Image (tube, rainbow, N blue to C red; front, top):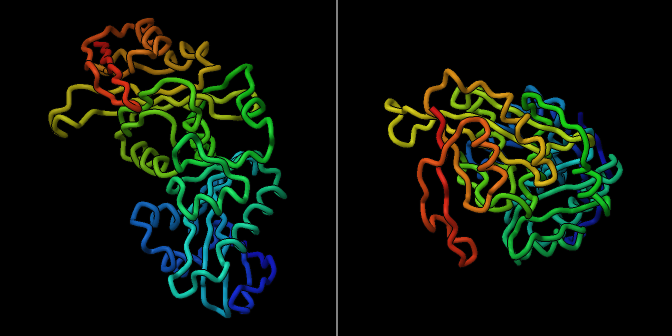
Length: 329
């Protein structure tokens, strides 16, 4: 769907039209991918899929600026949870059109659109303390500690409402988990070592990871996976098993069980892990930082034993942290 959002006057006195393109919209695919061709093949593949086929129930929205028929700027949002959660990315203005106020005009359109659609929170990643960082800050985004990971909480009590405690549900993943996983892995409390598959340590985003996880599921690298949701519909846990090929693709004798759960839902760990079939998988390993007591206990309850300890494996802000390897055969 293509919607005209109006016209703004730039610093150059040029009149720029702002158009919102909501996926799927195949007729715009080539033009948008040409504008964003520098983003890399993985991003181009994900955008092509969304534009040509769609990624329902989620959608991508491209907010573009046009001078005549020329594309002079873009901001893309990934919209999930019926409009309540989102990710902002792919902000780009061609060099010859910079310093005209294009990004600011598009940001205004993006934030107004998200609020009008009932948005609760939107995340993004940028360089810490960079010029873009402060542009986003002016629109309500706030950085997490001294990083460029930022969240705009439209709803003031977002964290309490989104991660509200209560009964959980288990299901397979779908595209609507893209932004909620971003918000789950943005939680600052909880286990330090969050994924061996992605090498995730500490809080951070999932924007660039979901596409890789999706492809790993499609290719069979990930053999089992589960999403755990809370009463609000938030993703409060993720777990999956993948074949470990780090020691030789044709000689792999072990799989890895990766999982991360919001601290308020540790009580549901047993139910989440109990949904996996492990008996016929041979050796399955899992990794945990030394302080992840709840994770270690949950693994031991389903037959995992500590196999090794890598002393001081992670340097976390000057503090050395052990990593434990647990295994079940």
